[in-house]
Length: 444
Image 1: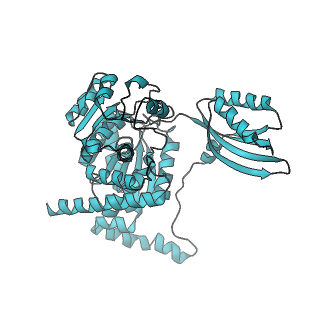
Image 2: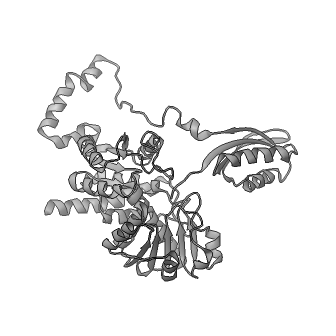
Image 3: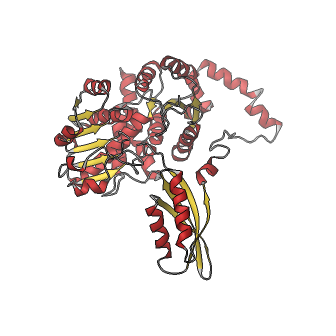
């Protein structure tokens, strides 16, 4: 579910003649652009100026589009092409700010010396009170080594900082959590584990982000065992939660019982393996997978799934197909069985276009444009922090997926990612399961 597309904003003037905007849209489409938002900037006596946001695969399409609009004529003018994404990132997207005002010496004495010494003594005597008297109880470390940044691969932790800042923004805006980016200048699993353990005292949760496969598996498993705070690798479990929600919704639309169906997972990297495990945790008994890496297939089998040697054979056997390979056009139209559900989730180009899958007889088909991790991780962490849980279990993640699916409108795959009601429902669902889990742990 990667995304390599470029986003640009075109300021275009069109004459007040019916069909002018349609001509512009056609030119954009012929250049391979995907239109997003259209904002009217100015309406004149005989013209309209609009900002049109588009997505393209490469800069060459921008040049082609610019030339085509120039040749179009007829009063249609391209004023500017701007990169609003770069502008939005100038100076970074996050900052640390004080929650208290310093307006007098009395304020200074309360928040710093000498008053703060008493608070330190209280925490020394009762360490758990740090969650009350400091920001630790509401802070999550967003940790990356930069080895699997979006669809860009191993570009390093500093180049991945805009993604980590983005996660911090989403934590803040959608769940009220302090997300703190931590960039690690090492790819060694032992060094990563050791470093995260050393910094963990300042946080109540760890979100592992954009750490490549296969070392991401060892890092997460070790940290979950060796820390007493929740740890989650978003590329595995965040993706799996939203994918399970999408599968539940798709099966409802297609009239398929997901738990009784045969599900085929194409691609068993970090996301694919986690999706397979999530399906099994939900109650799907027949989970099959395929990957060019034999170790990946062995990992699936260790968790209770079964592997295939060819995509064609997998598709011939399964009712539901989920693909997360990043390979456009991997699934051939002739392999699609009538009545199948096809979720080809790689972005920007899916393994098979939904239209082609539907033409071949699929009961339901969708790509990954709406399947966004943001629907999962903010509410999941808000829920476990509220419950003061010490780990994140598959039952909590399944509860999150079911909450997302319950908020999905009939016919849709998942809800709008910025719908605050969805994040509230995910939080409450996870908190309920997490609180029960903690009660059981304490009882034991």
